Length: 482
Image (cartoon, rainbow, N blue to C red; front, side, top):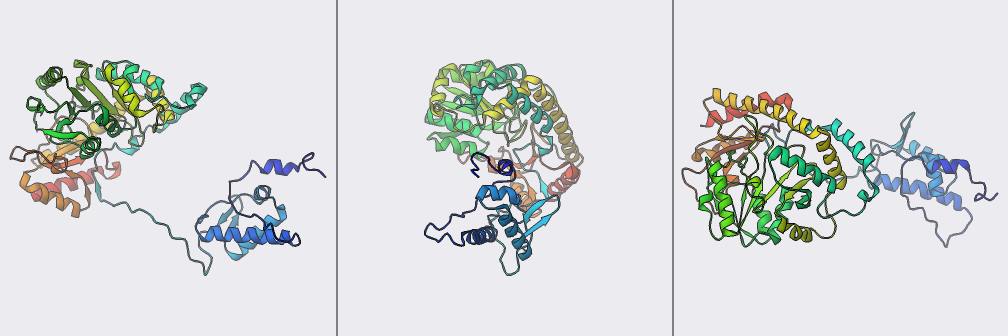
C-alpha cells in the first residue's frame, strides 16, 4: 500500500507527541540489505547506551514514547519497544506508570557516572550582599498577567528586528512615568533603552564623554572600569555630607557622573546648592552631567528628591534601570538624552537593537500603564522601610548611628578607618557577605581622616526567615571589634 496516499494514522499523531531526541542511526550505505532491521535495532540500543554513558542523557531524562520515537527514526514500533525493554532489563532505563520511560537515576553497574564541571557558588551564613532587591518581592503574578496582555495586543511588526532606541511603547510609557514620578523632562524620541546602566556608560564613553570624566571619589568600581575601557580617563571628586564637592570640578573634565538622589555608597543626597552649582558648571564649560538615578524611587522618610535632569535637560544625561525596583534579572535600563546626542547614541548601537529583549520591554510598559509598577514600588518601599528600621534600631541600641538618608537598599555602618580592615576580615571569617568602604574608593583619591570608612551592607538581601538573626549577628560583629 502506498503510504503517501493512505498514511498510517498513528504516524501523524506520533509526530506531535513526546520530546525531541537526536540519535545517529544512519545505515551503512555499503552494507547488505539482509539483516538490516536487526542491525538498526542494535544501532538504536547502542546509540541510547552511548548517549547515557557520555552524559547527553542525564539521570531522570524523559525519553519519547516508543511509538513517537519509532515514527521519528523510521523503525517499526515493535522494534523500538523491544529496545526499550532490553535497556530496562539491563538497568539503563526505568519505566513507571504515569511518568513514562526515563534514564535510570543510578548508573548501570560497571559504568562510570558522567562527571560535569559545576561552578561552586561561595556560601555565606549572613548574606548582606549589595546591589540587589529581595528576590521574594518579584511581582510574579503581575508579570505573568502583563505578559499575556502585552503579547496579545502587540502588532506583528513587534516581533521583527528591533529599533536601536528600543520599544516605542516602553519609551512612551517611560516618558510619562519618569515625568510623573521623578520630574524628568523629556519625550519618547529622546530616550534610548539599554540593558543596564553599565551598558549605558559603555555607549557614552566611546562617543559622548571627552578625554576625562569626573566621578565621585567613592562609587562603583565596575562603572569606572566600563568608562575607562571606552578610552575615557576618570578623575575623582571628593564626597562629603552634602554629596560630591562639585565646586572642585577640574576644567580638564568634559563631563561628571553623579548619583545625586542617594550617593552610592555613602547614602547622602546632593545638596540643593550643589545641584544648582553643577548645572551652572556644565553650562559654563560646555560640559555634561550624567545622572545615575540610583535608588531614586526608594526613599522612605519623605518624598523622593526629584531628578537633577529637570534643572536643565540640555546638559544632563539621565540614566536608570529596574535592577533595584524589580530585579537585576530584568535587563532593562534607559538613557534620557539631550536632543543633540540622540543620533550619536543611536549610531553607536547600530541599525538594530543588539542585546535587549523587546518582549520584556513590552511587559514593563504594560506594568507601567496598568499601574502595577507603581503598586509594586509602594509595596517595596514599605517592605524595605521596615527592614531599614530594624537595622537602624538594632545599631542605635548598641550606640551606633547609621548615617545617610533613609533610602535605597544599603546602609553604611561607620567605623574608624583604623578598624575597617580588621572588622571586614572578621566578617569574612564569620561568613558574612558585605563590603567595606575602601573597596569603592577611586585609586586616585587622597586619603585623610575625613575619608568615609565603614562596612557597606545590603539590607534587602537576607531572607525573611533569618533577617532578625542576621542583623543581631552583624551588630555583634561590629560592637565586639570597635
